[in-house]
Image (cartoon, rainbow, N blue to C red; front, side, top):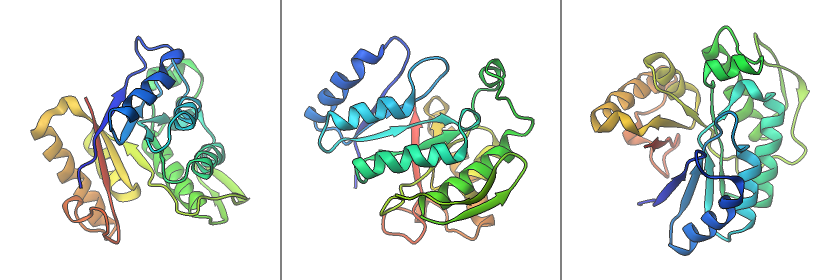
Length: 223
């Protein structure tokens, strides 16, 4: 099945353009619009909420929300709320953030990969309706559960570029957001690294994990 979508970059596009863009994309027959949340532009979840509310079937993804800016419980609440209002139409993506920007707001962490492992694991568990207690380096939850978890948990995608991050994302996430500027050969290299992570987690390669598989995996390339 082919999915047609487009990206609405935050640069040069004020918030006033987001809703008209979403309506135009839906009228043109596109399936998805993807946003990203760069500092210090538009907020991803609030923009996604407005675009979802202004359309009937369009899916809206965020690629990605910087993990250091959000407590994982808040990220789960934002995602569950959007899914509850617009079932199956919101696609959350997360990443460890641009380190210089994270430093500007006092949110830079010593180990971005540890943060990603802890946050993505906890986020997926909360969205699956689980009650979570954990005490990690960056994520601490004490008997936390969503009152209104999604009926069907949305896939949690994570951004990755370097080899370590790609292996980690293959291991812990439901999909990946990669830099489309890497080209076809770069995408092939990325998939090989993702597959290493998936193998470590006992899951099939990306090529065997499409819709209908036991462990579906989604890849989005941002050009």
